[in-house]
Amino acid sequence: MALRYTALSTIAWLTLTSALHQPVARDHGFVASPAVQTIRPYTALPPSDDAFYQPTPGYETEAPGTILRARSLPPPSGINATISAYYQLLYRSTDSNNQPNAVVTSLLIPANASFDKFISYQIPYDSPATDCAPSYSFSDPSTIIGGTEIFSVALSAGLPVSIPDYEGFTAAFANGIQSGQALLDSIRAVLNSGYTTGISRNSSVALIGGSGGALASEWALELQHSYAPDTKPSIVAALLTALTPNITSVFQTIDGTLLAGLTPLFLVGLSKQSLPLATWLSENLSPNPTRTAEFLQAGELCSADFALTFVNQTIAPYFRDHNSSIISEPIPHALIEEVGVMGLHGVPSVPIFLYKGTADELSPVADTDALVEKYCKNGTHATIVYQRAVGASHGDSGTYGAVAGYPWLLERLAGVPAAKGCTVSNVKIPTTTAS
Ligand SMILES: *[C@@H]1O[C@H](CO)[C@@H](O)[C@H](O)[C@H]1NC(C)=O
Ligand SMILES: *[C@@H]1O[C@H](CO)[C@@H](O)[C@H](O)[C@H]1NC(C)=O
Ligand SMILES: *[C@@H]1O[C@H](CO)[C@@H](O)[C@H](O)[C@H]1NC(C)=O
Ligand SMILES: *[C@@H]1O[C@H](CO)[C@@H](O)[C@H](O)[C@H]1NC(C)=O
Ligand SMILES: *[C@@H]1O[C@H](CO)[C@@H](O)[C@H](O)[C@H]1NC(C)=O
Ligand SMILES: *[C@@H]1O[C@H](CO)[C@@H](O)[C@H](O)[C@H]1NC(C)=O
Ligand SMILES: *[C@@H]1O[C@H](CO)[C@@H](O)[C@H](O)[C@H]1NC(C)=O
Image 1 (spheres, rainbow, N blue to C red):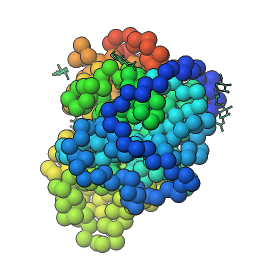
Image 2 (image 1 turned 90 degrees about the horizontal axis):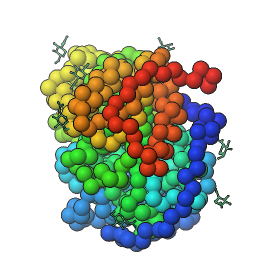
Image 3 (image 1 turned 180 degrees about the vertical axis):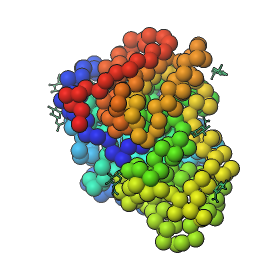
């Protein structure tokens, strides 16, 4: 949920890059094989105007993870790696109301790719606006894309990278169930895409996500047992940084601060798949139409632009009676407990590298400490390397956590099993590169 990632030191990344350059035979087996449209030259249309995003009626009966449509596009700019192919897949998923929906993932295949492993990289796009989805941001140079440094390094090492629009077409930002299920189905879709992309159905997959991207990733790991147990052999590791386990707690931490804009973003996001919350918002936002319009701009501007309009504000004047405690009323409270609090839907069995700043100004470290303790006390399931970065902020933990955990992630992708159980340690961010 960072407004944007702090620029990652490219030098630090490059020194950590290790080669995973073993090309393997392509797996041409496939389940579903819609024709791949090749579109060049290409002028991107925003998702709200692009028919590619609209599934053909009848898609609802397909299994989750089925590819509904595929297209090949010219590689996006701004990625520091040689890209040999760029695909977008529209696939069937399931929203947080257990209704079918269709979601897009963007798949980058680098030069000299390994076809038996890939990364699922969750961008922290943090926006309840459909047209701020990564699949479109890639084609729109005016948008800031967080984390390109990180996946450029993976691509340069020959790892394909899948970047799902995990909030779905409705852009249900902060909804853990929507995000987790869309992520799991994106993995199924990529594993099903061999007929056109060359990716092996038996590939090993590693998840990387920071902040809002860690939210999607963590929910996927919690929901894996119930929603997508077939992905268990495939997902071998996850690197999560700057985790936000509890949305209510985030709200209490950021109201009135630099990051205050996140509250309208997540309330509008959560209202996308909740009629009760949408109704509640319409009844409880300020009677002053200007105030309400300013608040609802969260659903129109991309997150960094919106957050700038909301710096240091409290939400009180945007609600009736200037009462910010109103968001603990039963309707928002119940929804947040259901789709916005981690740790209530299962213990992840995928090995996790977790990195969190003790001075995270967006989500208190205590929430992540408690989540780890809960998972690790369970005993049989969890495998977690938890590094607490002493004094590090939210942005710092996103940046340095990716560097700290990447070698660990590559080992898992190379087939080296993680040491069982949990380890918790306090670490320092590298002072020479800290800013
Ligand atoms: C791009 O990657 C190459 C090697 O993969 C590296 O030498 C170069 O510094 C990188 N450039 C930037 C701007 O990160
Ligand atoms: C791909 O591999 C070949 C052979 O090892 C090498 O010559 C070439 O530079 C590589 N290309 C990239 C973009 O890494
Ligand atoms: C994938 O794994 C299954 C089960 O281990 C095996 O039967 C199959 O041959 C593998 N396919 C490929 C393409 O490696
Ligand atoms: C989430 O955080 C809020 C605020 O700290 C707390 O009251 C609530 O109990 C937490 N929810 C869970 C399920 O831990
Ligand atoms: C927001 O508050 C911080 C801390 O009080 C202050 O340094 C900053 O200048 C404020 N920014 C704006 C835009 O009000
Ligand atoms: C603010 O809203 C909360 C939740 O509905 C309520 O308990 C509290 O009494 C309200 N405070 C004021 C001053 O209206
Ligand atoms: C441990 O995790 C399992 C699987 O998620 C769950 O069924 C069980 O209730 C948990 N036990 C405790 C003590 O939390």
